[in-house]
Image (tube, rainbow, N blue to C red):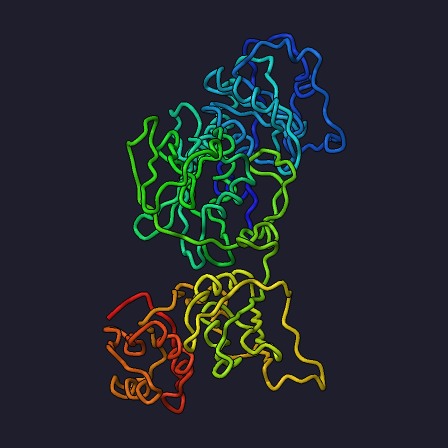
Length: 541
């Protein structure tokens, strides 16, 4: 479930206390701020009738004539907005040195360390609406040059400073840091059960704003990416709203931090790197590195691992991100991203070139069940070399397609592709079927029925080495090897796990033989109470 942006800020709301009245230094001719400051400041608990949600607040006629100031005036602030959320609006442009929140008047003032930071903030939000909790916030220069408290309200000022420091710490800044966060984000994908591609990342991060460049790579066996935005505001918005989110349920968690690189220098447009501002770049030769640098090409180069993608990430909807209004923002749900080559993300696969004499619904259930929970299997009555297989979720269907397309099953190279069918129908009464359609929705052999199952972390392509589990302590190596031999398989090697004899690796003559062995030996009864569990392994013996 997606967290709202404000949740990231509540960690330090205990530091914030209601702000007492400020004394404004260097008083000037007052413009629209008279709304907030006339008749004194209203206590934080006072509520006033506010119709700004229903109509756009008018900008003062004299606003364009106001001299730029370090103090920025914010109007139409939601009553429930926290001090820290308001501070966050100014942080991408520079250091915030003070804040005044007028909750009863739905207004606030931010004091920036430098006038240039205030100018950048007002200029930016002139072309892009600021938002807090779904409400448009209007940003303009203040007539006042400085916010300052007297000794009577020193405790309140300390509270404001504590909130500012906490907000800066949360975003990796220190109080003395000038300038905002970087435009380049470093993204790490943790617990990557399903593959993630450059295109998937682009579709997710472009929901926040324009993505200029992406470079993907693998470091310490972890899939990572560098993503560049045109400005720090968009980069901060992406970090605030996407950090810690799961691309898919319970897995593929995004960990986002600011990169030390100032820009990305992309040399090739391919599945590992892309410069969206320069579509004419060559694709490059496979295996060539893509370099990225801090202001100069060739400083840092990385090699990349091939990753394949998956659809339907980030199921939680949001319409605003990081104080910015997203034009046409919609929920990132199953329909948000499509599988490559598909017009929709479906759960049904079409499998062809099957061995008519050997294949059965149970065999397909077991094999495809390695990559997801198979709900139904239908071998076509009039075309028995073709079957429809319905998985529980679209990403499971794509995962099965990714790993099983073009593998050999019972001596024939099968083809696996998405089906246009939305589901597999059971035969009607009296309709000829000969047991070719089976419903497995209630099967106890589903590997992924438990949310967050460890099986998600052990999904691999077909290999000659099989992983065996659920081995009872009374069964030894010779008994297991004999069981495989009796089923017609030539065991090349066998090894128990050193610290857990409930698991073992067994190596067969080829990948093709291992596929058939998995089908035949999965759920094989080893004892009265134990059935063997078989899956593909990434290891060798």
